[in-house]
Length: 525
Image (cartoon, rainbow, N blue to C red; front, top):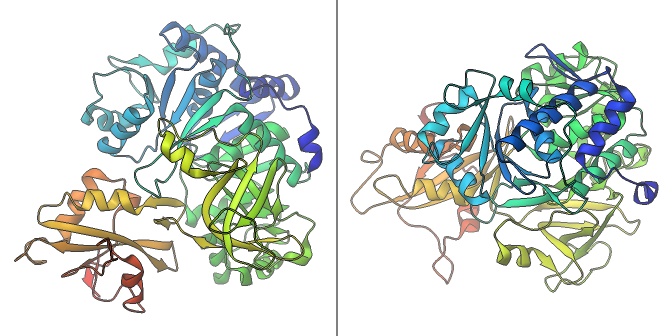
């Protein structure tokens, strides 16, 4: 991995695209199989340049913040890389967001232009931003807005901006799950992407030619998997949306050599399903350690763990050749450009075997949280160490182990959900005084959302029915954030400072589902 630190990386995202187009030309770069669309390396460079030209014509300049609210189709990488070419800053927005959530991100990130799928216009029109700024509409009629096809057709294929971004210039404001409050926009520089693409390429021994991108393109992992393809000269097979039931079929149908495997998919192999025999390497984060060796035998290839987050990219990895660590539970050793330590509450490194917080530092990290100087300062310790908020340990041989999260969130399938954000919405339900959100273990999705509600005096679940609670949440939260379990409580256990003591709620009973309304099954448990 040290050769990556010594390598000369492309100057920016646009340079990466152009170098790949010159090298691989009409070779397929991305197959969007649900839409039956194939994008070649040359296609991407040409379309991104044309779109950049048209965006410049309507006022996008170096540093302009542009929202991208697109589904995972061929428009996404073109839009993202056109903005990058201009030195603009892309703000990916989850297409599942409600009007309230869209308005928050747009306001918080100072978006000046929005590129959006036509099918998502009702959400935009229902927000308070409908008359606030220009809109480019993709994948459908544009009506009063700028049309995608018109922008591409009118663009100059030889366009070159006056100023090119460097490794330290921002390319994205990438919203995190908001584990300590509402979502925060992590400022991601061009160098972050250049390093990450090269790191993954090197970790996989340069052998991957067909990789599956099943993660949404608006997430950091979906974008990183796409850039792995650009850096490797391979072909990405991109799913329009995640699907556990279709995942194994994709592996076989497209002879996939590399993927990131959700645990729920790996469990399907117990039922006799097949994944084919083309896989060379699999990344499987956060699986139970006892399943790794069993699944390696089933897939016929190394299955490796790792550790990373939006702010850091990839921080730890288990090398492909480290067969002796399979099933050990380790998340690996530091990747290129990263130092990792386990620290105590004072920020000092602790010895082998001692549990503490995972700290990370290195080159091309995120540059802080947009417009949040206090939270940015709080996220770093002396010496440039980023405090992850996660706990772990390191053994005497130097291998790191991830032990859990300190952050107040629920991880449902691949989605990170801020408990604070859901609680804020729940407190807006008529009759609700207080709310607390906790994760409930779930075999299929990893965790489900449970909401505890304290009602106004004299009110009961007959007055504030779970159906009414869910209807209110559905208007203000993406579907994946909706509580599955709802329990009414007379009063909360509290800390001396009168804050809700969630640890006591967790310890109250062995099965947190008992006594709650199950919104999926429609019953009280």
